[in-house]
Length: 333
Ligand code: TRP
Ligand code: SF4
Image (tube, rainbow, N blue to C red; front, side, top):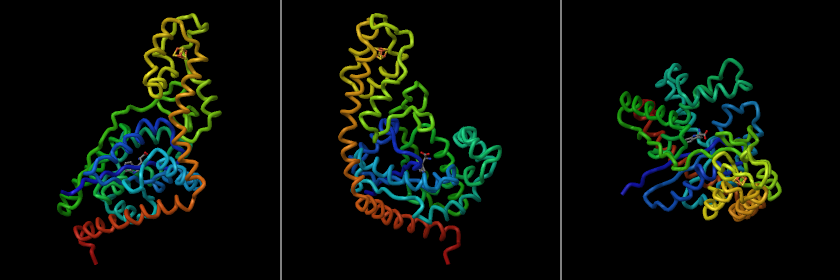
């Protein structure tokens, strides 16, 4: 039986945090048990440059940070091909070919692109670059270069997968049946909120706990987390539904969260003790991850070898796709 391919990735613009951990990393590790799947995970440094073109060092530094985060949560290079986007020239070539199949109006209507442009005024000002507006085309190239049929992503990426499907259909209808139409696989975990209660956890918002944070950093961050503002004394009855500490207990303290909420509602639990309990549990969960990370931090050659081996494997796959695409487009000289 032919194995199905899955392809997903991240822009290397920062270290990964517990939002990534619950949102996508855990499910990628779980997917490794599926023997009928061939998995590819891309460190999308070229896409990271579309909104960080003026800060190449940041992208460069974060390629290895993200790789270390992947490896330390258990993404296994023997089961998942981890590779670097900028070393796959076929992706750039496909992007050029596909750009004939997408109108500017269609790109401008892409909800994800629209939202991002609105958020990135300080980079783009009033007029967005051609590269950023076109990154859905490049993402379609990412997916199709490897014959990706399943794309595990968060909800915010759905419009990009839809745009990829449209490109594939258009390509196949003009040049003949060549590319596979991908399907998004939504991870069951919803987006994880930030320490301040913001819907999104992120670096720019300063509300994230990183997989690589130290005990001290975790302590400080949790101590500053948003709790029920109505609770002044330990005896006052609390509402865990509006408390971020309770929210994270739900992720990190599965066996204790019920008691936490009951005691909070009954006014039998102090917020400081409640936070300390959460800190202990977060540290317990992250300790093995941080230990693995430390192992790799001390072994840059091993990291480089893992990334290059994955990338060579990915290059072979992209070459095969390119042969088919050029033949279909009658540019196979
Ligand atoms: N756009 C994704 C993000 O911002 C990263 C990404 C790049 C990606 N290429 C991809 C995701 C291909 C899935 C498939 O996180
Ligand atoms: Fe939040 Fe715990 Fe305080 Fe209740 S006791 S408000 S759950 S920190």
